Length: 79
Length: 248
View 1 (cartoon, rainbow over the protein chains, first blue to last red):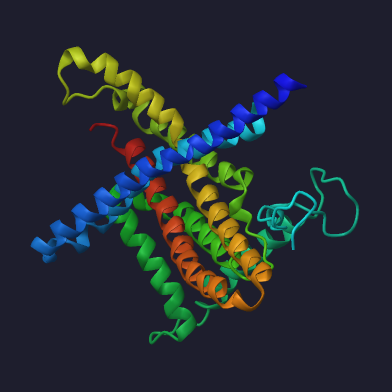
View 2 (cartoon, rainbow over the protein chains, first blue to last red):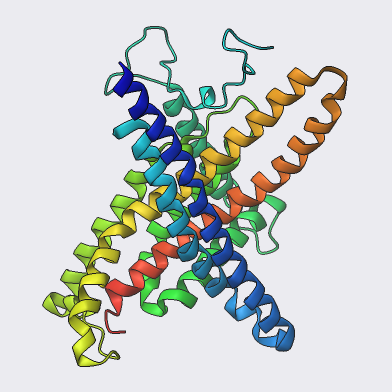
């Protein structure tokens, strides 16, 4: 009983810690969007052609944040 | 408003429960559930916009027809930009994916609606069908040369085996990130909206603050719904490009 409660506690702490992964994804997405904006302000004519690249980059950066969410889900429901 | 444990009685995940529509408790393979209902409504909405809207085929389009034409032109240009002209053979598939995900996301925003794309089972089927068809297509079109996708020619020779391992792992992780991105974004947004709505119920007179927050969140969710449909489709195009042109 005691060990079970302890294991639950560790699990919930782990799930909380995975929220840090969200910060990493936020830095990545912000970096991409900020660099796109600064590039677009220097050369506005070229910007519309690159919005697809912007979204692809954001999607890939976001994927790594999603993996931390996946770890949280696995800890909550699978372990 | 507080339950037996002293915490607020907000159940943000209850909205994602799959329930049989016509009585009964168990959900079997062919049970009609709320997921079935909202998927059917999604298909009906797509049909209404694309088939009924464009039925007139007028030279000067009506409002309904120009919506259908805008969606068509948008996806056509996306495939042309990302995969190149030879990707246009697969236009019907990608258009279907976009319209389905887009309408499922948008219909899920209606209050009391069920968001079908918030379930991993739904998005995993979409992503796996893309993954399997792209892999099969790559081998059919390029034969064994498709494996050159994992052999990065531009890197130094000593690094290439290590890069190949990384490329293979990232290739097989694709359906996971592809599906969880959509389902996670949809689920998280709806759960946050529900939590804020629960605050409004608990706060009494000060309910105005959370209601304003929910209104702002709802606008954000509308943006997220559109962007996630766009991202899902454009990633399909990116994966398709790898099958058509496996050389870096």
